[in-house]
Length: 481
Image 1: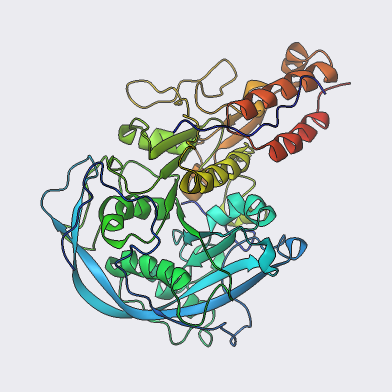
Image 2: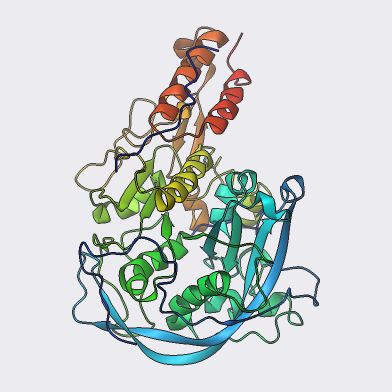
């Protein structure tokens, strides 16, 4: 190995989705007065929890990769949560700065499900629950943040909870992409009792799901595990809703201890359906945050979100990861691509490794008052938001992984394919002549790659365990010996 491996701890300063189963009163937060953390401070009702759910086809319906659960001795169970949820209305004028005031309006009865993945051995639980707003872009429930982050979640003892917060996932169109469908269409026996009153109630349903974990009424969905911190997460379409939740609902609800907003575009989601429910575009994240927020952008997203960029602050970070796509070959199974009609070699970039770091850093951020995640360089764009690229077609700037600094391919977050395929980016391998000019021998390539890995780890964007794993890729790369 070239270079010295640096494994010291870092010190802080102060939609698309998985496809095919691997496929009260007006409140605004006052600046400077935000409470850190949520324990004991929530204003949200605790729904009734029942389960574990059985019957029907015998297992939860969700398009996620579960292949690693047995190796890490994890249990998956499903529960129903039920109660009355509020919709929200706007108070005053909402502007692009994200400091939005909201108030509860109508209420409606709901019954939905949550999917729980937890260590079977309580001693392995690290005390943190990642609560994911399940993505419904394709017409059914999927957990893309589980997909990107599953290795980190499993190896370090997190619990994960997926929430069917939206109407489409429960009772939407009969058939979604690739023949998959909402819960009540996929398994009408198992899910016959579910009731979703519409997406204007989704924000409170998501809050109540957090309450069901922290303060269960009825069955404990964590089977006795005692959560210390709840991290909310959402990717793509769910990230749009997460922006609106952070800006308008979190100051009221006070359920979650931190937020991972993954692959947002320039605007948040509507606060309610119909006229007047839309939110300003661009939608910045409010600066008077109650708890930490980490916005994680792939290269694809930067081209769509750049107008909503904003500076970091003590409770806000935005990471932009060069050479990555909204969804990629790690997330989307190869079997799904022909069904979707994709015609390009989709992105094989290193997004999931940086997602691992984002999860670990957000957990530390909400528990350690002296820790702050590193600041991300921004991907370079011109005045029209077009990404600026180097001689190899790779983007300039951003979080640099060894695959970008020691390239053997163009890794782009963009392509000209149709539909969802256009969000999967592209990989264009270099030809033999280009590889030979860059790396005269395999040892030269490996040495450069390992030094670039050291830099990425030292800058705080790769975890040591992943840095070691990434280096094995270099040793098998198609560079002549």
